[in-house]
Length: 244
Image 1 (cartoon, one colour):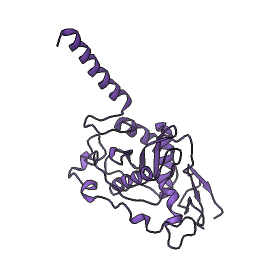
Image 2: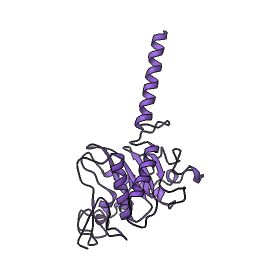
Image 3: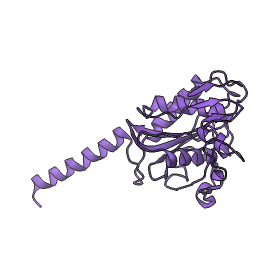
Image 4: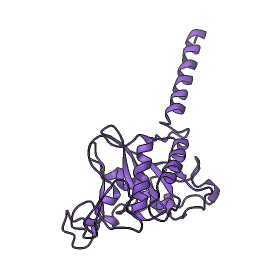
């Protein structure tokens, strides 16, 4: 191979590497992701600061790619145990749920499922859905070092954790009308998780340009998309207020 060919090959490698770093489209370990860890961390902290619903707790955020594989995990508080540790796995399951049920131009959030999974639910009854796609405990609880949780090297990254969650906090991620993954938030009330996740998706620029995955806060739970009220839910984003 002559020097000119070698130089072209080297430039191509550098260009590809630079594109990955700039776009956050792939990790060094080969796991594709709609967002980089650094961007997720920064925008999560912004969304947390903007939202004042719920108990004002901090959050875990987990992103999965279109294949449902965890590709980024972050937390919004100052330290790894400033938010409920259990919420890390719940956030992963919310992301998996929303991604798995969202189609091109047809997003479904985890919060929209609440009314339909109740026993005897009238609207599009889906009782039993919450037991579908159970969490893979080996993937969810991989890693023994708390200090790695919520970092770029979180042990869940690269794992398909699974899980099905049927309350607020999970959204599909989109490039225009194309579904490209999911994000899940957990750490506060279900309504606050939904509200802050809605803000986060907007800050990431990954909201769908078609479809509707908002919830209606209504304790009657007689329509698809109804979600029960939560404490301090007046300013919940991505939601309309129902009659009760």
